[in-house]
Image 1 (spheres, rainbow, N blue to C red):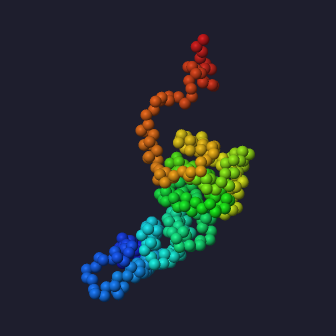
Image 2: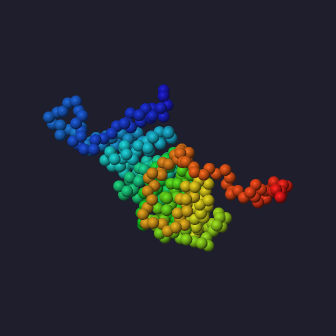
Image 3: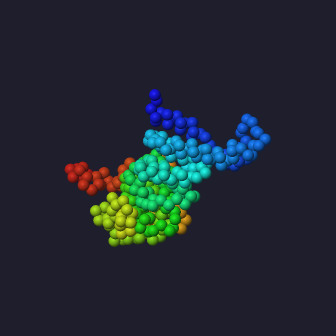
Length: 316
């Protein structure tokens, strides 16, 4: 007897390719067409959607293996929800998935986005949960591009309170200190866009007497509630630190916050899937005019300060 996960994987392989026509006039692929065709259920798109909906709900009521759980969530927003008569029946499945954490929560965001914006789903503490998903792995996970695309949509409303947006800006900035260059080149414009949408948060940049390091920062990184994180009392010393980043493109991007931001938002769509390979490939294709052999300007044979040779040798 085969184990249940093996059976579930086979069922998923059978039902996942099934799709629905968009209009009833597209339902013409039948071997025989009867005279009373229009009176039969098989001719009704709504009946097909009802059967499709029942099929998926029956499948998803069972506990799924983690790998299969992720596969369902990957296709849910574009291959399942649009073809259901009542997409809101997926609320329980998606809210449970969103509460699990990790990659599963990231994948559940797509489906929740559709239910929130198209079907008026009210999800208490939605932004609190979204905030909790920001951890060091967010810049390294496979679904990074998908997460930041959706986070950009969720944070696009100008009606969000300043403390909430400031908490997102501050946590993203703190996590950026250990992020790879390809992620930094995406998240810095992302943060700049948040400042453009929410000018009240610019106090984080224009606070000359703010903390200069982590020990003096009033922001509470471990606080799960954005309203209690004290983000608006802080400043973005993290972005100032990134202005000294070893990668010149990152340092240049971080220096933009030293200037007045334009009103036009940066298009981050081309940066969401930027990879380390692309950055490396871009660098090796550059033609250097002056090849640096020394990072300090040469001032004579023994011209360096505290040079060991200058202490024991002289050319006089």
